[in-house]
Length: 598
Image 1 (cartoon, one colour):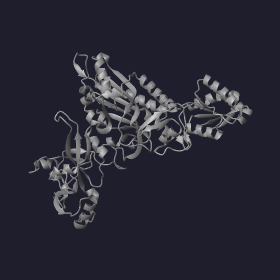
Image 2 (spheres, one colour; image 1 turned 30 degrees about the vertical axis):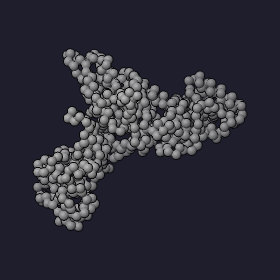
Image 3 (cartoon, one colour; image 1 turned 90 degrees about the horizontal axis):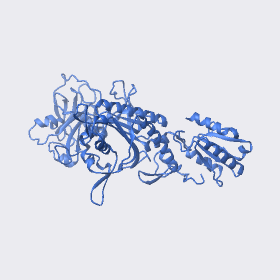
Image 4 (cartoon, one colour; image 1 turned 30 degrees about the horizontal axis):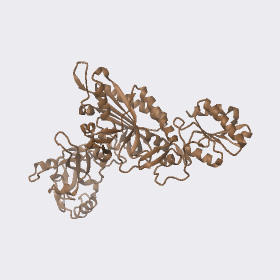
C-alpha cells in the first residue's frame, strides 16, 4: 500500500448518482476523465482483467476465436447497412485530414462480416465464431450511473457464421449457455428476457438483465417465470365484441374538450349515459399524430419523414419507446406544428378516424392520407367517443369494424401492473434491471447488405447466416459492485476481487510488521494474492477503513497484541467470523477460508 497507485476518498464524489460509481471512485478503482469517460486505476484493472478472463474462458470453451478490430472505422461499411444514418446522434462521427468520414465504433457487425467475406468462400469453412473484447463508443446524451451508462465502455462482442439457419440456432444456444455460466461464475444475478433487436436487426433476441433498482430497463415477469423487456411485450389478442346492439354513431357538441379530462367532463355534463354509468377516459379513443424518420432505402435516395396516426384508449399513456420498437430501425417523434399544418383535414384536439387511414383514402379532398394504426388493446366491435374532425365536436358510439377501419395494430401504450402476460399465464408484475448481455439471431441482414456468400454443398452461392452476442464487460463490473457492498465500502466476490487477502500490519511495533511480512511471503508462495498495508505512519483506524472500502474478501491483521500472543487475526470483509489463529497455522486457515468462499 505504500507504493500502490491508489488514493482513497473519505467523502463521496459530488456527482456520483449510484452506489457503484460512488464506491469505485472512493476506493481508488476508477477516476472520472469527462462525463461518461473513465480512467482505470491499478485496482480497477485487476478486477476488470478477472472479469475478462472468465468471459474469455467460457467463450473460448465453445470454440470461438478471439480477434481485435480497431475502434476507429471508415464510413462506407456502415453506409452499406444504413446504420450510418440509423444510429442518428448516438455515434461519434469525425473526418480525417483528407475529409474522409470515420466513426468510433458502437458495435462491429460490419467489420466482422467483411473479415469473414475476405477470408472464407466455402461451406467447408463454416461454422466459425469470432469475438473480441474491445472499447466501444456511444454519444450518450446524458451519461449516468458511472460505468453503467457511459460514452466509452468495454464490451465483448461475438459473431457466429453458419451456412444455414439450423447452424445459427445451435450457435445461438451455445452462446446463450456460455452467458449463463459466465454470470453464475461472476456471482451476478440475472434474468433472461425476450427483447427486440432494435438497430441491430434480426429476429430472435434475448437480454440478460441484472435485477437492480437503479436499472434503466423495466422488464415484465409472468407467473410462468417468463420475462419480457417492456418494448418486446405483446398484448394478448382482444376478442371481438358484439356490437349489434350499439346505436348508430353520432356527432355531439363537446366545446373546449381538447384533453381527455375535459372530454370526459363534457360528455358527463352534456351527454350523460342513459344507464346511469359515468363516462370515463376508458370510453375515449385518442388519436396521436407522430412523425416516423426513415433512413434512405430503395424507394428514397435520402432520409424521409412519414406522418402516421396512432389510436389508443384514452385511459392509457403512449409509451414512445415501445411504439418506436414497432417502427425500428426508424426513429419516431411527436408530429410538429408544421407536420399538422401539412394536413388541413386535422383539427387539433378533435382528430378522429374519419380523416385517417382507410377512411381518408376513400374520402374526397384529402390529398395525402396518413396510415392509421390502432393500439392492440382496441378490439373489433368496441365502441368509443372520439374526434369528429370539427372544432368542439366528438362522435359517440363509434365502433371499430363498423364505423371505421385501421391499417393495422401496434403496441403503443404503457404496460400496467396487472396487464395479462403474452403467454396467458396470468397478470404481469414489473421490476427494473441493468442490461448486461444480449444475444441476437441476426439472420441474413448483414450478409446480404455486405454480400457475404459461400458455395454450399451443391455448388450454389448462398448468403451466410449470422448471430451476434454481446456482454457489457465494464457494465458487469459495475453491477457486481452495485450488488456487493455495504455502508462501509465494496465487498467483492472472491472470484473478481483485486486480491484475495488484505493484510494489515497495525501499530508501531516492528514485530507486527515482521510477522506480517513473513506471512506475506508464505501466502504468495501458496499463490494467494495479497494487498499488504505496510504503511508505518498510518493509524490502524485508517487502515481498517481503507480495507473496508477496497473490499477484499479476507482481512488479516498482524497487530502488536496478536503477534505478542503468537496469533494472527482473520476476519471476513464484513467483519464477521473473526478468529485469532496461531501464527504457524494462519496460512492454512486462510487457504481453507478462501476455498469456502470459492
